[in-house]
Length: 183
Image (cartoon, rainbow, N blue to C red; front, side):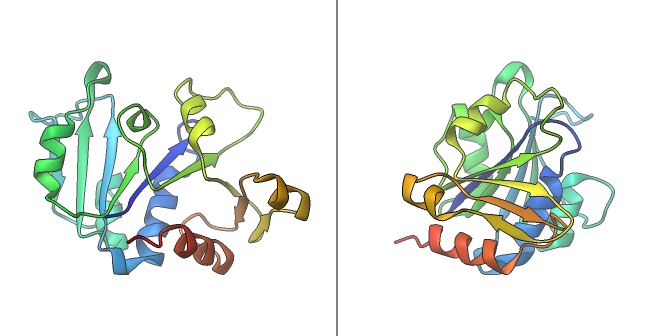
């Protein structure tokens, strides 16, 4: 079972695009993709399963990218119904969470921080992502990775620059496989 958390500095920074890119780049994992929100979105239950792939919602985009299952979890007042969630996905599921706050409740195999404009005001919940991140991903004019020899020796985390967050670069894909080698 692999668990990835994609957190972001704010709204519209590309978290959903990166989740879709990961699903497409790593189809072998047959991902369950989960968006955790603080809003009800008009659903009577705290966990709602998307059934139709498309571009109309984040969860529909997950399915269009190739997710096995896409869920929207309403975490009103910070309460994430994890017991219900794990029952809904079943044992052994590989899960990608789009959420900052989920880090209060679990330790993922990988935590990716999506950085928007560094001068913009960050969500307060992004501090937890920055503390636990394994790598940072940012939109750039072209693909690249920033890890110089000094950073590699000091154990600093890589910064992946992607021209499109929906398209994982070969360098990032190699890094992902290296870090998701699970027993």
